[in-house]
Image (cartoon, rainbow, N blue to C red; front, side, top):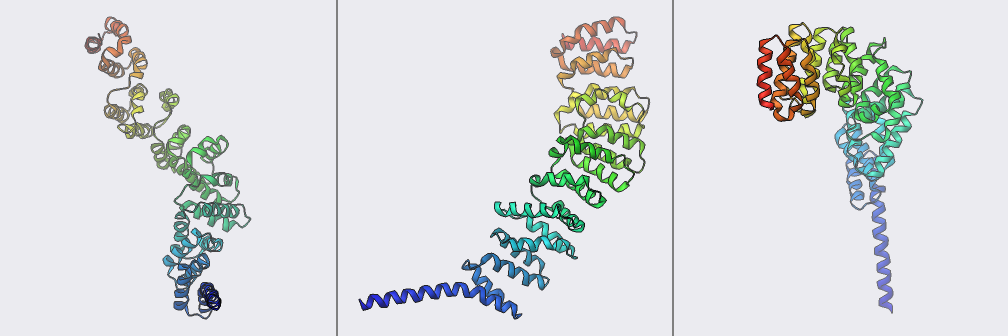
Length: 389
C-alpha cells in the first residue's frame, strides 16, 4: 500500500514536471525576448515549438526577432509556419508589412501568403484581404491590391471584390484592379457589365488608365476576343497606344469565326501596317491552333488590298497555315466567283488539295473552265478537277 502511494506521488510529480516544462519553455523565451537576450529566446522558443507549446505564437515571436535584426527571409519563413499553424496574429503581421518601405519585405509578404497550403488559413487570408479592400483607408486598399497582384495562387474566390473596384474614383486603385483582372480572365469576360467598362476605358482621356486597360485586355488573351475590333481601332487611330494595342491583339489571337467573316469590310479604312500586324495573329496561331485552318477563306480576302506588304504577309500566313480545313470547302467554292485572280487561283489550289472530299466543287469548277478567259485559271481548274473526280 505504501509503495503504491509512493508510485502515485512519483507519477503526479513527473506529470507536473512535464506540464511545467512545456509551459516554461515559452514563458522563458518570452522573458528572454523582453530582456533583449535574443539567442536564448530563440533557443527556448524552438524548444517550445518542438513540444508544440504555443508553437504558432513561438514561430511568430521568432519571426519578430529575426525581423528586428533585418533577417527578413528567416523572419517570413517563421511567419509562414505560424500561419500554417493558424496564428492570426502572424497573418496580421505579414499583411501589415505590405506597406513596409523595404521592397524585399513587400515581396516576401506575397511570397509567404502564396505558400500557405492550410485551407482554413487560406480562407482567413482571403477574408482579411477582402476586409482591407472594403476599408476606407485608400493607402491600405492600394497596398492590399499590390499583395494580391503578386500572389501566386488562385484568387478567384475574391474576384468579385476586385472587379467591383473598377467603380472606384481613385485612379491608382482602378489601375491596380485592372492589372489583377487577368488572373481570372474567364470570370471577367463573362461579366458583360464590367467587360464593357474595361472597353470603355479605351476611349478615356487618362492615358495611364487607357494603357493599363489595353494591357489588361491583352493579358486576358483568348477570353478577350470580343475586344479585338476596338483594339484594332485604337491601333489605327491612336498613335501613342498603337504598338501597345497591336501587342494586345497578338496576345488575344485570332478572332471568333463570326468576326472573321466581316474582316475585309472591317479593315477597309484601317492603315496597311495595322492590317499586317493583325495578320500576324493568324501567323502566330499557325501550328499551335488547328482551328486557324478554318480561317483560310477569310485570310484570302486580304489579297484584295493593293498594298504589296499586306499581300506578302497574306501569302506568308497562308503558306504557314498550309492546307485549309475541310469545313472551308463551301467558302472556297464561293471565292471562285471573285474578280481577284490570285484569290481564285488559291481557292482552286485548296479545293484540289482536298481531292474527293471537295466533290461539291466539281460543277463550279466546270463552269469556271467554260467561262474564264484566263488560261492560267482554266489550266489550274482542270488540274484541280482531275484530283477531285
